[in-house]
Length: 268
Image (cartoon, rainbow, N blue to C red; front, side, top):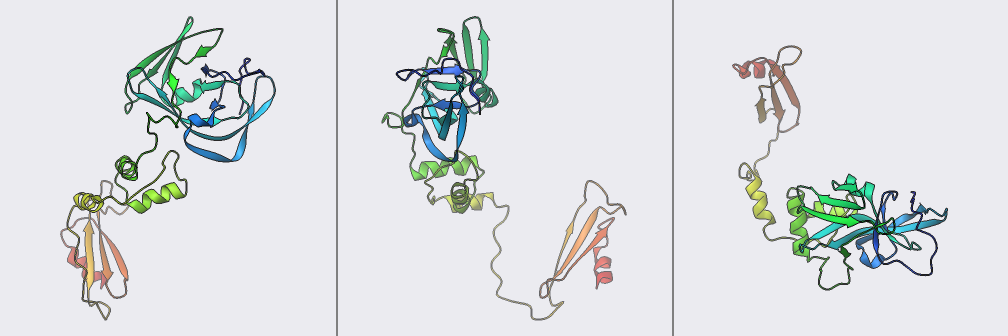
């Protein structure tokens, strides 16, 4: 990963401002205390600076800016890079996330146009050939902003966002790191079972107490169709026969559904 910023030379102190950078390939900060949901990288990522030196990104997390309208701007995949002297916001990463940045003269207009985000515009003005960010990031230790949610709040949020999965699915996603940004804790919700019943198109069948003991004692059959596209032989329907005892299955194809019993006689 490369970073092109001529101002990242060695200095005697750290610049606590945050800057917009058109050459940075990733968002980067030297202060890990700003990053919520922080994850260590298994293999550190080399960062090539403008002075030909190399730093390593140790991990990444979510950085949150406090906006003037009391909303919050969440920037994901913000990398922690010890040894940097400036905090940088990547232009390319922001445009990939759906934000719009318009440069004109000595200013830059930052706009949020995402459907799931509150619309806002932030003007940034150039200072000494840099674009300092005019909004303040929040440290995760700040008690006025609770970045961590309770187990019930977090579970309900991801339960609704992911289309009502069961608790084990949520835990598997987090345990195996199948998606970024999804963190626990997850807890069993009392209304999980009620919502599952609401999604059903019919009530569940009671468990059978009778079992077959011989082939052809009980045959399950189902007719499916019409299909939008006929088969090569002109069939629009198919009929299945499943023997309950052996699970032996026969599938026949029909042009019409007027006489499925004839297909059953032929199959037997």
